[in-house]
Structures are given as C-alpha cells and as structure tokens.
Image (tube, rainbow, N blue to C red; front, side, top):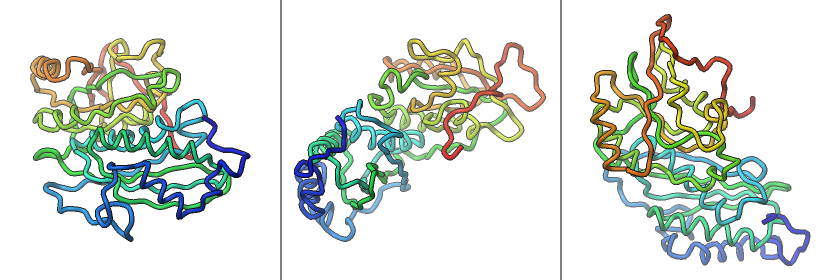
Length: 309
C-alpha cells in the first residue's frame, strides 16, 4: 500500500495528534498496558529486571527498509523483529518497547492503522508490551524507530568479543537474496536459538547478520586473525550466489564463534534435536594473520551494507 495520500480526509493530518494517539491505543489493544505501565504518561513504569538489562534500537524508514510493495502490517512486524534479532544475538529475551514515529501529515490513516495492528500482533506473539512512544511531524518522511528493552535469558550474555584464533565459525539458517525473496520482512528472529547458544560453554561470541556477513564478520574476528571461509559450505537461499550470500544483508541470522577444541559433532547433534528446522553450518575458522589455509576463501573485495558510505 502506498503510505501517502493526496486526499486530506484520509490522511493523519485530518485527525491531528491527540486523535491519532487515541487511535494508536485502540490499534495496539492489549499489546500496550494501561498507564502508567503503558502509553498515557510522561514515562512508563517498568518492573525491576531479574537479570542483566539489555537495550537496543533500530528503525524502519520508507524508501530504505520498505516500500509500497510491503504491506503496512509486515512493516510493523519487521520493526519489532529486527530489534528482537539484536536481542537474540546476545541470548536475551524482551521485556518492553517504546516507539518514536516520524511522519508527514499526508500519511494514510489506513496505512498507519495496519502498521500498528501488525506491530501489536507481533508484540503479542513474542510477549513484548509496547509501553510508550512519541510522534513528530516531518515533511516527506515516514519512519519509525523502536527501542527494545530486554534482559539476559540465562547466566551469560554473549557479545561480539571473545573469539580466539582457531575457533570455528558457524552461522544459522541461509543467507542472500533477502530483498528478492521477501525474507527481509518475513524472517523469524532467532530468540530461542540465541538463548540456547548462550547456554553452551563452547560458544564464545555471537552477533546477528543484518548488514551482510562480509561486513558483520569483521566485528567477530579476533585481533591479528582473519576469517578463513569455505565458500562451498556457505548456506544460501535459492538463487543466491556467493556475493549475494556475503553482501546482501538483512538476513537476520546468527553468526557465532565456537571454541576450536569443542566437540563440533556433539554441538551439531544437540542443535538438530533442539531446532530440527533450522540449519547450523560450520563455514570456516579464524586463522592467524600469515597462516595459510589450503582452499580457504578471503573476504577481500566483499563488503556488506554500510550507512553513509
């Protein structure tokens, strides 16, 4: 659906901010608690966290993260799910979210209703209360930024640091052609998988793949090392070539480092029992600079998405 309309009566400008906020409360329904635990006060009141607290923020912007070919319900769900993917990468679970909306007055009322109803459905599915937010106007803009709060789901929070020379590189799912296949909004965040991996002692570091493996993997690579990849092992979506799998981005899978001395077969067997429908693939290992690995593939010449570049 085209989010903008030339018919003033069908636009959010015909309502104004106060009526729009009342409508948002209705659209979210029980996905948003009553004030002061949800929308309606200057701040939301949250219960004390049981574990270490996590926080992340990600936006969706019309023309960048979605276009008129993506339904507004799917856009609302994508906004929450891309934040959930960040939480999954650290072995966390969500506790609450707030949303900042920036929009032109010409945005359709119907588009925004479907967006919030899609967000609410997704929030209920993953148990995320939408506890507040903000609305501001900007000409020619339609964007929403969601801040997601969470907490550690177990005794350990996984970070991007911790990998060592010789560690194995694993990735979940398949990569490449996310835009062409619609995976960029149809994906399922790996929350359960991230929690499971964070409880495995042999997993040393982890992050989600959102900007393309070729870019994201650099953040996981230990100092004075390089990722020696097996291009034939790289799991790809149908029709994806090597470059697409490495650089397309918006895969929302997990890439992780597994201790070099770990029982790989045991890990893979346990994974298949826990997640029989999701691939876990070893795609290489971290080699020391200057170390020659026969048949290994280097990422030189491949780069994922980078803002402002």
